[in-house]
Image (tube, rainbow, N blue to C red; front, side):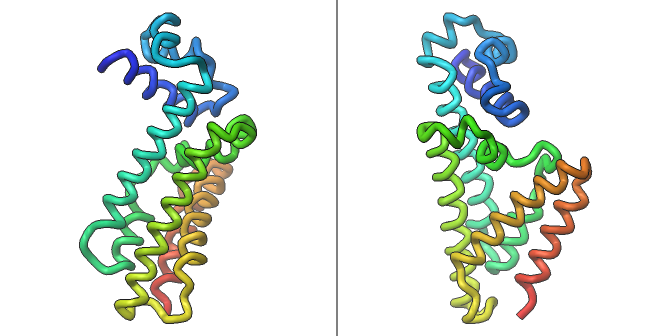
Length: 185
């Protein structure tokens, strides 16, 4: 793996584990096995590297989500597949944790890829819910945009509850409860 890729991957991992403030250039360089000169050759500084790492994490989240939401099957089965896919629940969401990071939220350059990722996810979920409505799977009264926001909120809240309990059980209960609600007509 090339140095620039190691730097980006290391920044992604450290941002996920430590947040922006806890991710120092030295820590990134150490994890990437790269020197200071290599980092500053490829990136203007910590914020520049963090922006690229956050964008990459967002792209990866979209790719994984699309793998579930874009497959064949009913809307309900695709949403359930997305909700129940394997996740590192106790580490939280790579993007969701950044939305709770005060330094990321305060910086429009860093916040933008986080906001764009969640906007994409809500839009994509709304499209799948709308397909389910058209196919008679969901009641006509179900609003796709509100439902998509609820799905995203339940996932993010599930991560928070699981981390607080140091157990994935609250996450699993929240996901199963949401699936039960979506299956109810």
